[in-house]
Image (cartoon, rainbow, N blue to C red):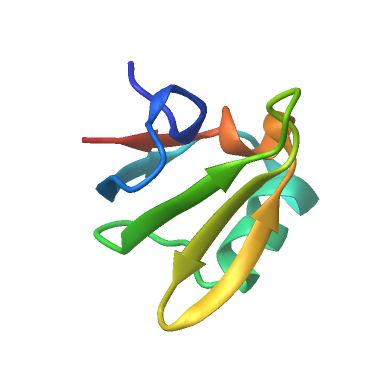
Length: 73
């Protein structure tokens, strides 16, 4: 399983599946990250947390724990 955490800066990826349950999953979906959404990986912070991405035309920072829950292709 490949997640956002495994992607490289400058890469465009497509969301396959969201892992996690309850409020955490809901929060990720509320940010606009749903199945088949295209995400552009902008950059990673020096220690890998957070990850800066562009989703649906806006910039977003994801914590490493949240990025691990988003399966991509």
